[in-house]
Image 1 (cartoon, rainbow, N blue to C red):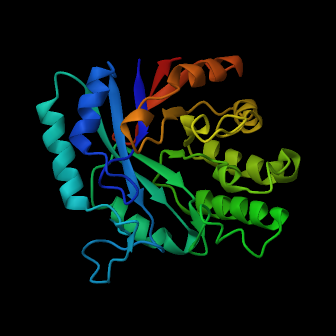
Image 2: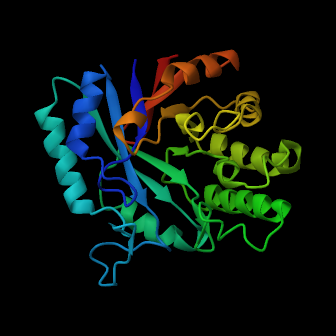
Length: 276
């Protein structure tokens, strides 16, 4: 089964990939199913109907998904292409502990199939531009990242999987921080995830970012399996045509080599297991 469960479109502030073109591309690639997971990042972005000024970065609005239009578009495309591909509706919640209540309210508004819980910023400071890392030692920003993630999985339950769980690695200009130093945090996070019936994603963008390991790392994936974790989703984190469905075969083989036998799709927030 060929799926992609981390897909961005023009509804995300960092993509201009038209949603219908995503669907057409997925059909041409003989995909069976995709899930749209456009960005919501309360704290650094505003909703279109918030009444607040929308700022622009590189010509694109620093705004969250236009939710009514998003839901309507997915519904239209589901109907139009119903005999060719399965389309699921999700979002990527870029969460922080001080934004939990806003995500609770958003989750209650729409019938989602799937939610990715990600941490893209802490204390409203983003990773990609080094705002979060600046002024901290490598130890401090790595530990603070995992502390935030732990608070979130303990304080929020309306999600399906953790997205790119060790995302901080992608933006760590000091190199990869040794896993043994953060293992206590990671283990506690994973135990909480498993206890609550949630999962983690394997994000194939590690290949296009030139990382030396998969995302999350093999150490995290091995620990997850040893702790009894079974729920795994596969996502490209696509923002462009060339990202869609990329490196799925390589990722599947990596998971098999680590002892995993299945992956999941989702329907109405419930995991559906498939053989790798």
